[in-house]
Length: 340
Length: 170
Image (cartoon, rainbow over all chains, first blue to last red; front, side, top):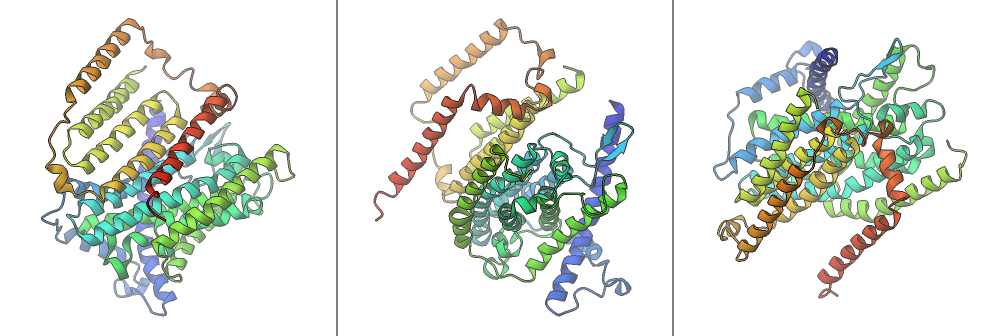
């Protein structure tokens, strides 16, 4: 019992450090990659020998010392709670994310995720669902700022549209693996092809929902800079404002890892049959980081959707397709089509 | 129930009760909605203590993640100053008080009569490690007809809303 608590605490501290460093590196990489896509250099003055790698550290120190402005008419308590929710719940979701393949010690497995429950995917979806309260609260608490309110309203409209479709897309791999456990879903793919080859439609649908969940560029409606100044975080400054991108980067990581686990076989890959643990680890992170890069790629490439276009697409195109896909998967599993 | 479990039970049940009181006593409707989420998280914690992890996740996804979000969405169209000017109680508050007080007394009598063995908590729910499967089997074999009836009733409500709101629009 004490051993369990101790390993839990150590895992928690390590995960906290890893995710914090990841967010900082991501802040740098995002700006550098966007600079590359837009044919400019990006940050370079802070630590010029390292391509501006220490820029996020400087940014963080700056946010710490900036004046923390709270609007006079703001709802003080909710205004303070919103960024806390925005940083905390994506982090809570990341706790159930596998950081690598399970390590076999003796007869039992050692899992690299802090929270290992048999309904792991539902836990992650629940935590990500609660994240939207940060944007909602930020918009409502901003004391009647119209930009904030419109940003928050768009977030709700966006969220109720994509969440249904995303759950239906994830249902196909769940049906095929017959489990809600992330590790068992990967194990189900280790015997044959990855689920992306059986479920190409669900893969594409989930890819679209992935961008909508993280509110990254084709669907960054809540903070559309050109229309809404900064959307829901218009009134925020200093450390409170820094919490929102932190949560967003963690969401990007969690969604990438979900994508890899559900459709691309997690840590399975060529030349890996379970025993060189480190190779599985490398496969997993190569795939996850590719999707993290894909987020930034789309950030620098696509124009933004209007939010009525997003809702049209989700409810009128993706939802019927997903329902048909689930029906087809169920039918194929019942009659034992040669897909599993 | 061990010491740690009792401690966690005290925390999550306090969350559920404090959240419910917050819903009732807050004058700002958005604060009420946030308290409601808080209360739902507490109830989800109670499910987790019973080892019903599937219900825990569903409690948060469906109630906190979807229903309260819709309530909060409606709040964006409310004039908060008008809400502040409303009187504290509805005219028929006396009847509500009597009924809820009766239910409270009822619950007290029930809990004092029934011997609830807390050391058995969650044992019959965690069937062979996964109650998701057991729940699905029960719903689609023993309770298939009520289950489908609920689905039809929800569909009727859905169509009813569309019909009522689109009546004037051609």
